[in-house]
Length: 54
Image 1 (tube, rainbow, N blue to C red):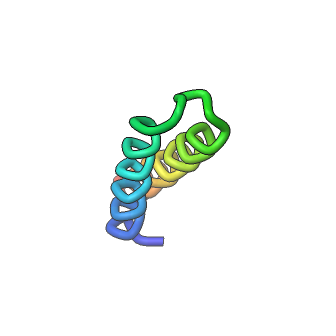
Image 2: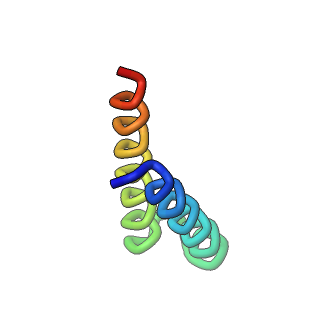
Image 3: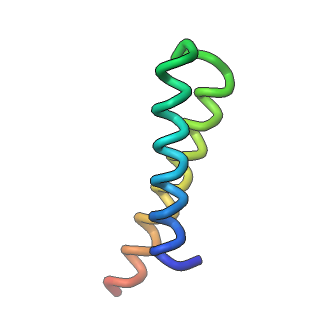
């Protein structure tokens, strides 16, 4: 997966999380799932950047 693709997915997921967080309780299962998905994408992004620097 390319860095540009990950950045787009991160931004889409971040917007989705912000929208959901404003409408639902922050401990709602769906909000937590999206938050964890965003965390996973950020980890992938960081790994890709680390590989690129090597």
